[in-house]
Length: 248
Length: 44
Image (cartoon, rainbow over all chains, first blue to last red; front, top):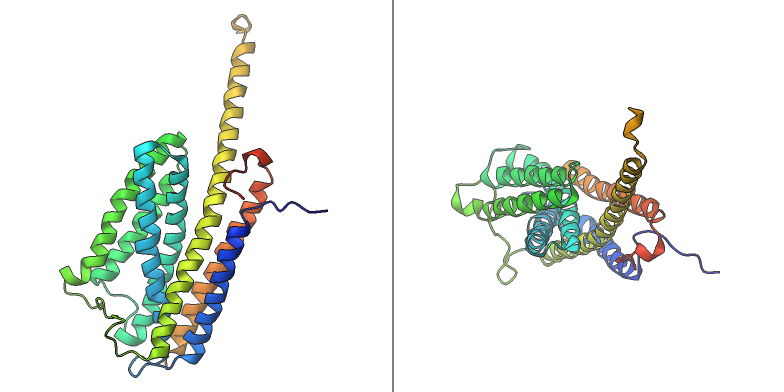
């Protein structure tokens, strides 16, 4: 007898999850074992293979999805896009947290400090706080439509800071390097370059897999919240219909 | 040189991902059981 699997998994998530798992295993092999240490950074360069992909996936892909989802939600009120926006923001905040932590760990041996109020780092930390605020708004105990609209507006406003993060190294004098990796013209060792691209692919696949699961979880939460609201309204109507003013 | 920063970095990232994945999948499984099959749109 076939047992029904209940959860957020499906054939699609299993395929994407398997790809993410294989890419992550390859990233660990190349990033930690097969690629050489860098001349000045030593083995700390290996943090680069997870730091940059985490930052790119969170800032440009995850928060980009949140921006698109928020705009579409405000335009046509689609619950699907509202939930996609929220799911992408949550996974994006997780990845941005990883980018900040690995950046701090890389900064200590390279710059001599875990933290500095550099424009790129500071604007990234502001993005982290803004999207944490976005997630907090999504958890407010409000009318679901009003809550989603406020979250969508905040999601769009917060994305403007991502643009500031992108151009911060060009606008202000920054310790953080700008775009230093041009695949067409790089002096990087091939195995280091390969590890970096493996990191990008692994993080993108992991993000896609997590987004599918997190969206489905959000969909289930939305359905159950609607059930609770319908039950509460029915209970109030029941109380109103049995109310007898003469008993007061 | 640098392994004392690299290893904690990888542990935090992949350990953090593992915890988040476990939490998300468990919560999804627990809540999906409360949802009638006809309302499991997007779950296939």
